[in-house]
Image 1: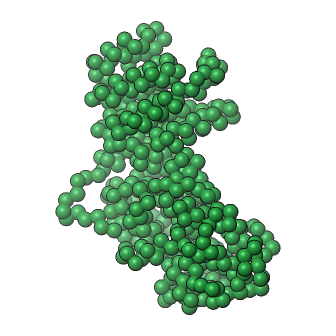
Image 2: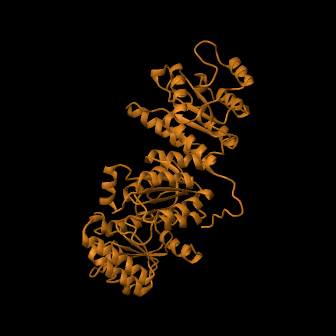
Image 3: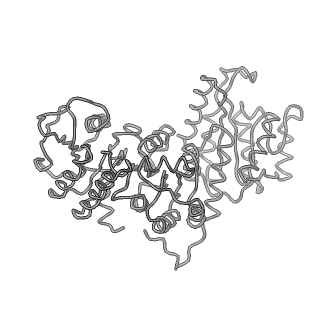
Length: 485
């Protein structure tokens, strides 16, 4: 991608002015008027121009009958008119020199009709003729908390290091909300829908060059040019982690993808080859996508797959070992000096001084847990550490008013975070709404401090496995292995 194209695409996310074509004066249901309202609510600081053929004013803003009547050429045009009117709007965009267009309107190839396909081909043809960068149709478009371009998703959102690319508007919204609620934040997100002009590869290339983006999270239902996507994904993934959640793997999913964005999902064996050749992290759900992003962004490189599990309860220790094996990780065989130090610390009755470590006092006494972590950091047989944190509750004979040791633990791990990967688990499943509220709050508290925390051991171990695979898959680059974008 040339520098000029990169700069032009930047205007999707940081426009100085936005025109919205197709703003209703009566209904705030989803469409032009609701987008106008959300742009106002999220604090967009640029100029907003509602375009309506008759209305003199909409939501306190002067309205204009056409794009040609605007006092300036807007950086971004949001198109919200019926599908058969979209080509005319695009021609008008070309006539006044608009660069970036977001087509919110649906009714194109996703319908599966000849007319829908014809309209989409016309949109693509006009865009090529006029030199327009078009996101859509049938999409939620650009999102950027730093630019206050957040008419959907988390509003006003939280600036951060994750770029999001998605064919699904709903899933793009959910992913941005998820990341922002845990304190990670989003650099830029793009819901690109049918991809008549700009597709996933264009957006990946853009985010690969974007300095504010340190990792890319993607949801795709299909790509038209597999070779081009493979080459671009491989190049970007060397520089910053790329995490991909692919829809349409099952027959039911493929049918839904065709109805959703008109995409054709590719054969499974081709995608397996894609993951092997690119090193892109494969995930199968939104939870796994966000879990992997946190691990890949926040944790240092592990030396291996050996895990030290710090928890409590004999049964918990047993299933922890099983979960570790299922994730493709190893339960570390602690060194003799570490085991001897643990035996001196841990009571012989009611605890297990080993790995997994069953030691209830580690839940309640921050200094005791810190002593354990010091041992783990110094043990060459330990590559990664998983620490379980318990929500105080009567079921475990714990005083619910007990002092919270989390702040002390967070401060210590923040200061030592580069030594070895450390993640936390907070088990709050089971249906108790109070436990769920307190548990999710504790997970968010750790994550906002830059320490990955997960609501269950299985998710934590899977995230660590993704971390290991990423670094195992990266190879030193020779002079002939260029990764230019």
